[in-house]
Amino acid sequence: MTAWAQAECLPGTASLKSAQVSVVTDGDSLRLRDGRRVRLLSVNAPELGKDGKADEAHAVMAKQTLAAMLSPGQRVYLQEQGLDRYGRSLATVFLRREGGHLGEALLKAGAAWHIAVPPSPQPYRQCLRAAESEAKSKGLGVWSQASLSTTALTAADQGFRLVRGQLQSIGNSRSALWLRLDGDLVLRLAKSELRYFSVPLDSYIGHQIEVRGWLRKRTPPRTGMAGFKMDLRHPDMLVCNDCRAH
Image (cartoon, one colour):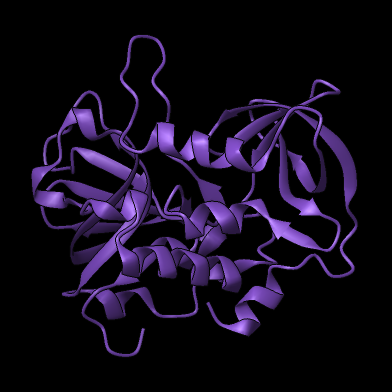
């Protein structure tokens, strides 16, 4: 990773709150000794199995990677950004006041993917993207397997996924744009979040793109409509694989 990317992962003058770790619960979450549950910002790790479901690939490795950096009672430093819908504190977590970004370490190990979910700020965006790029170039962890093709999606593929396909058209409704890919996938981009996108989306039409996000099967199926949907919320969740300037 370049020196400038490493520097951007330092907290600088950000306001940090000290807390003690109780236990790591999965690859991107932990519980503090004061009872709070914390969800790491800007990263998403594979899910551990529950309710009879099997662990996702690399989920155990992701939890082990995070747990190896933390021990019960260890002091960490949080830059908090409110709560998620499950009541967990959304936070960037550092091992030290002067640095040690947990999300960066997970990305460099291939234990998680970088995500950007508005309206959460992205102060460490560049260094996190660089950390992910390093792991991807080495084929580590989650990068040891290929993304899914839009032409071969099944109900078992639901959840956080990387999916690749050709963008064929863009539809318009009152509140959203609908990006139709080949195969059986449509992306929904809320018009309220268009301000995050600087590249005209129609310039991607006819190109191979890779998107990341939470894939959902539409039920019941609707005639003439894609069977799977994914929300596209930030340009960091989309890569054009055969564009020269994007």
